Image (cartoon, rainbow, N blue to C red; front, side, top):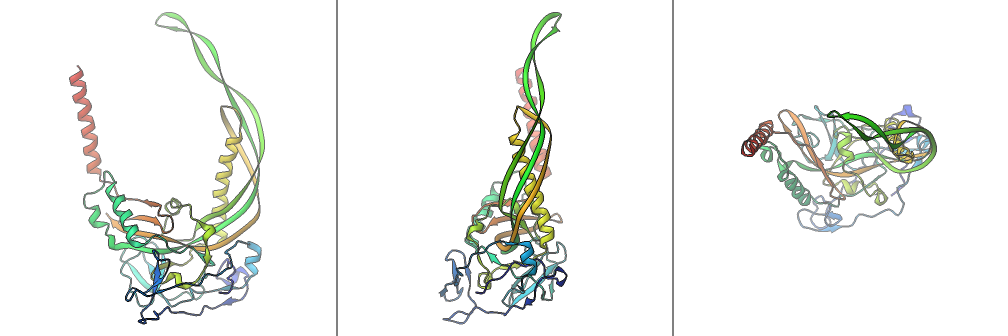
Amino acid sequence: MAPVPPPLSASPATGGGEAVAAKARKFPCASCGADVVWSPGASKLKCPYCGAEREVPVSAEAVVERPIEEALAAPRDLGWGAARKTVKCTKCGATSTFEAGVAASSCAFCGTPAVVEAPPNANMVRPEGLLPFKVDRASAVEKFKGWLGGLWFRPSDLKNRASLTGMNGVYVPFWAFDAATHSRWTAEAGFTYQVPVQAIENGRAVTRMETRVRWEPASGFLEKFFDDVLVHASKGLERGLAQSLEPYPTADLVRYDPSYLSGFLAEEYAVDVPEALQVARERMQREIEAACAREVPGDTQRNLRVVSQFSGVACKNALLPIWIAAYAYGGKPFRFLVNGVTGKVAGHAPLSWVKVALAVLAVVAALVLFSMVKS
């Protein structure tokens, strides 16, 4: 497969090179003619009808970051490279695609049935790389069942409302950034010490030790390199929940091939690189400040100030696999996620305030009973 330079935007306003339209591909089974799909367990394309398997040719070319300036001027490919149907959720705004012959009844990201078919986006940026699914649906469902079974203070009908039929495999778009950072920090370092203090307690003079802090100025320099800081480019997932599935083995990224998407949903990029870069810089800066704080000597600190410079910033874009169980409860969307490579889980679920109140009343009653027995 030809190299696909990482695009920054599908809009001509970015000043990028000439766009190359995608050529649609299909994946028929050589034995029975049905469409083959990616099988996470087998790590190859497999026919769901006759079981015939087919390898996906893996490009020897690695998925690497490119300087942002170079990517802006490079030509880029557009489209998924295969026939896909596009739907847009009228509630969360996520734009998803799937095989042309499949019908969508609800949004994979929020569980809302309010999805409408949307015209294909001719300017959709084709991903440069992806991580194929390794966790299959059955394993993801078992993780979901275990997660639901371990929840406390949840509504009794949650298991019925959080239908397992809503478990969808979705390729979610991400940007990955590298950067070398150089930071200077200043702070006040506090050193604690004990001094004897005379005091009156119960009418008697006593000596007790009191902790005090001696403040001294401190400063330093920190260099830190960031590799593959991920920023999700999804409208359907909240950033914090998506980050909780990290890390991903991004060193195993393969060149994008539409074959991997067969049988799965894929979300279009909703965040372009300028916005993603700002999010990545903020994320890096938080890590830098935490690292600088650890450099401050003494027992405590205050007034930490960090000034950072970024160099060698580079990026790449990729699709990362996530199993999503989305459902609505009480008019609000809730999600359970499984990292499609590592199996790491994360999710949100509604609280049953009745159960919480009953638990509080039980604790109060136990305390009252204990005090009565003790007295």
